[in-house]
Image (cartoon, rainbow, N blue to C red):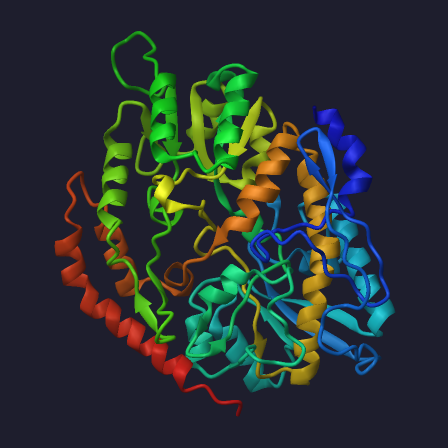
Length: 498
């Protein structure tokens, strides 16, 4: 099956990827005067997707307006596993270094940069300005008069950028159309409050894909080929639920013969971070009230008790082994490879480990069928947000090239990324899971991305010990958390263009 991917490489460059964009829209947006024919892999067959040709969908074609200019894109990165930068890959390529993601992705970056220069006459200068992308770096750049047309910080304490009045609003701008599929509509919904959108994500970076939290599984331990097919079909028909995972994990557990639960037993499930259960089941720390447009605390949800019960079950069950706070630590990955672990909760970047065995990949299951959809959380601090700082040389230019970087990211960076990813997957079935059931369902929690403090206090209190004491913990911590929400609303509500 893996050989099938070698035949798909040319086809893959034309795939209308739905990575974290548009809720699975199969059409693709093309640049002016470019015509494309799109195909998408579907198990062992290729299915022709709808074709959209003609003018690029930005509201105006003013591509020559800024010819001869340099676009300064300030980026952030920090090294993760295997040396790959958990940030904007272009920053490394711009510096003449390999990105850590391999030659295919590096070539896609170079091709993208050359295309922007050819079509628009604009050089893109990628500035590796900060390890963490904190507000202090931007504020220092403003003081010193440095130009940052677009800023791509890590999703960490970014509320400080808004509170400092350092960002332009991206909502309602002529050259920014959030309906384009290279913007993540889920991120737009997450980061739009009081009519203002200061952050978005989309096909600007590979990192929110790399840190998407999923379940890897050992096909051999699951059973025969039919068992894997049945699991994938359950995902496709929205039958993949927490109860189904428990049943499979129960069936996988076996003692090594000493009668003691230890590291050499075979387990059904390892959770690297129990906190993720909240995200998998659609519960966030903070969000925007649809009727008021204001930030609010969102943990006081009717299903929180069911989620806490699921967490307690996972922590105390004989069939589960928690790498979070447990004795395994990073050894859970080794247990997966050794055939002693059925399901392993890790990020997509773990592909380079799982390719060493017969492995599959699925989104985390729904709490129950009433949930109606899968949620795929990104790691809280790693995703790269995109914003327009007020030290841009030309706000219209920044707006326009925000869109340009979006569609070129989709057509070059993400396609190269997926081409490379396909080489490390077991078969086209895993590719189908990623493209159609994992990346389109990426979700972002503003409470996780903006900071810790009082909001995190409530979050942690929901799974202390093996007793559901959420109500007492919530009542104690909510006042401080709501003060945090009030400060966010004040910052977003007081925005001015000045």
